[in-house]
Image 1 (spheres, helix red, strand yellow):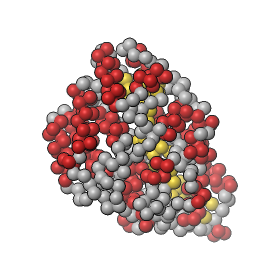
Image 2: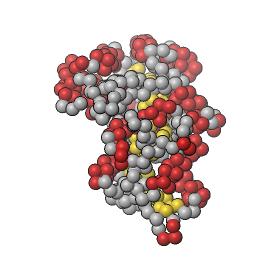
Image 3: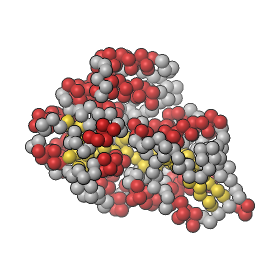
Image 4: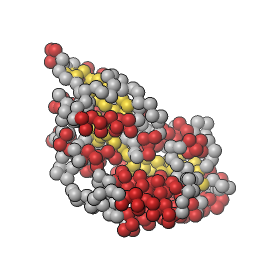
Length: 427
């Protein structure tokens, strides 16, 4: 559901561990054979109306929901319970970026690679959660296929085409083309930047690389950052476009300045996964002109997405697996999309007319279901995320922000600092 950065999007009030709190243990069998299943999620999965529906169809099952306010709170809780080998829910929701760490303790999770769910998800979604030995750690929930969200009014003022079909044609192609159109825009925009954040552009480009930081072997071989020419080129070319060419508004995503910028015409485009539609609309109250183009620089791209796992420490793992399979079935994912906008990752859901006919009034009635379904099918590469992926990505993110946002270091000096930080990681 949420990516590395999204963890700070919501205030860190944990809270609503709706039942027995963080320390609760998994469910069990009550008298009379009734099974209690705990389901731990975070943010919004859109399952509130699905739990009663499942319990009505399965009167022997009682579902107890636990919801953390942020993914980071949920991750901290999960790591603590895994270390203690006790206290996890029967079903635990996880983000895609947690998977490299969970691969190291895969023996603590049920293998969900069962015949009844084969072919349910897009291949890249399943591959992300599959260990080298073939164990499926989680059933895919939502995904984050990316398109380009843009301000049609600002495009028009700068003399660029502004309807979504023309913008898709204008931005179709490489990142160099996206930057070149940005230079044309900035030359006539009167100070409005082309995009919000160089860091967001870097992440989008990184997500199109199959092996940004290491090989895909079971024994991860981390590429020393000072020898990683492709990632360094990504770093320098992104900062050149953002800072030297003045295409970036130089904002850290999820910061207060970034939130306020939606009201101040600070930038004209955003690289937007489906889940970002909500924050854009929420931060743009009273602002008109947002639209979505069915295009993404460099081809397809995905940012974020989640899974449901079944820890082995649960007392009713078979019933938990059945519930997880039902919650992630195409029919239920369509309902979750309608409830909270979480974009499905299931093949049948992406072809459903209920999804493809959906529109979004805030984004000029854009056919968001059709656009993001096509963007999901355009994804051909997902980066291999070894155990050090999160740490190395964070080091380079910080390097970019030192140059772009804080203005506390040069491009060269900030890269050198990131190189030193990554040297501390073992391979």
